[in-house]
Image 1: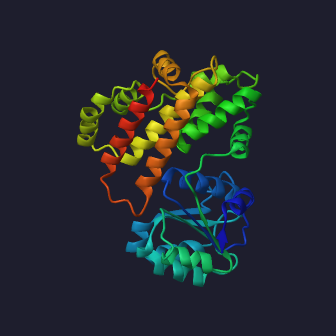
Image 2 (image 1 turned 120 degrees about the vertical axis):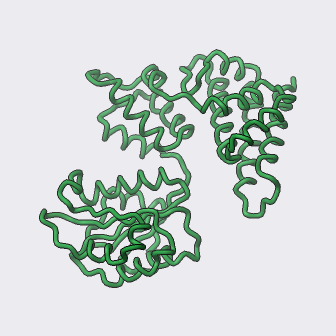
Image 3 (image 1 turned 45 degrees about the vertical axis):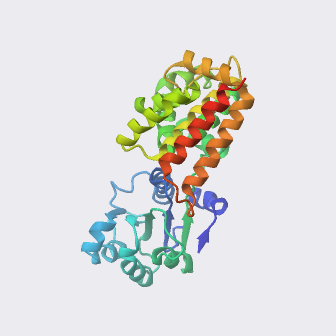
Length: 332
């Protein structure tokens, strides 16, 4: 059966131990891993691995030893409680193994938990879980954690935010990768150790990571400072380093989001940048209105890059968007 994102959220919080299994898939491996971690913790409890109630197997190993999965789901545990067999990085090369395991599963067996990348609609693995009457399949999309998810993370960490800090954390969640955001929360937890006061904006500013890698910073500053003539040479350098065009667009979007946040909220704490004074100058020169337009250009470029019908060279598409932004920023 198929679980929509709305249906998946309460199910991940309260898994059904009587289900045959669950397929978690998506293009962002970190988001899939975090959701898998959340689900297994709620299904099995915190000590499942120590109590040998969780068996892990990469898809490559399972392909070499197909009996591994069936042995894991049928094995009788020494400790009481639900059990699970986790298959990671699954694809259609092991579809028959998974289909056989789903068919042979009986009540009392370990649940079959499978993680995978971005599966096509025609994937045999996806079809197997979506068509199974007692198993689920859910896609993890590249959406940042919403307010409810952030509040749950804070609750688990024993943290209470001030109202302004909660808004800042929501903004930071949209800026960072999910793994980086979770690490930031862990850093804040350590930073607030022994301090029972609510999280403030200053605490977030002290713990938030810097925005991007140094080599990508160069092109972001060139664009943000409207130095259009320098874009070509810097892009050639990045191309030689093998920078991914989609990644470059994502980094640029984060940088311009930060500039927009600074321009729209003068005086608010600045986090997520290496050089705060430089970012403030850039934000002041652009202004909130032009930064909104810049973000629209970057969103449009990102959609074109991900479009199945896109045939233009990806890096050239990004370079053209950067030149357009530099020219926009130079307008007075």
